[in-house]
Image (cartoon, rainbow, N blue to C red; front, side, top):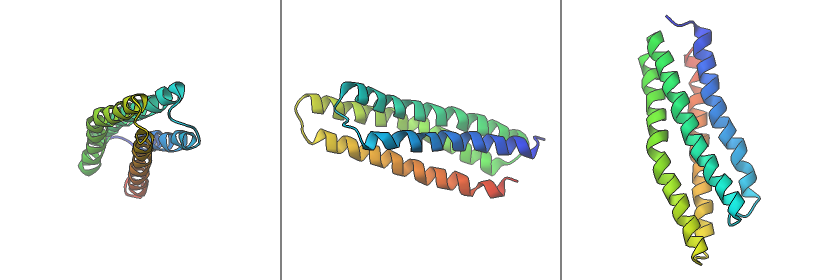
Length: 138
């Protein structure tokens, strides 16, 4: 059996990844996404976020499986699998909009902002869900 404090630390690490994305994505609301350096950082933020959530979700699932809590194991596996599955499609959509902007499509920046807002909203929903489940762990 895994001690309860290890489970708590595991959830804190997953929450840290989610909170980091929430805070790191806010500055992108105040800058133009058509600047090449900013667009590379923007894409890199989403890429790093999906990798971090996927990896920490797998580690959390392993810890919960070792503790015998199968519901949390399934939830963390679902979080990790979703992050890894969505990663390629979101990055492809970002690349498509950045290429469209370079080709002269003026509406591409609006669509890129919608991707940004959608990612932030989805992250907040996941963050709230994980944070509200902490009380069931201990």
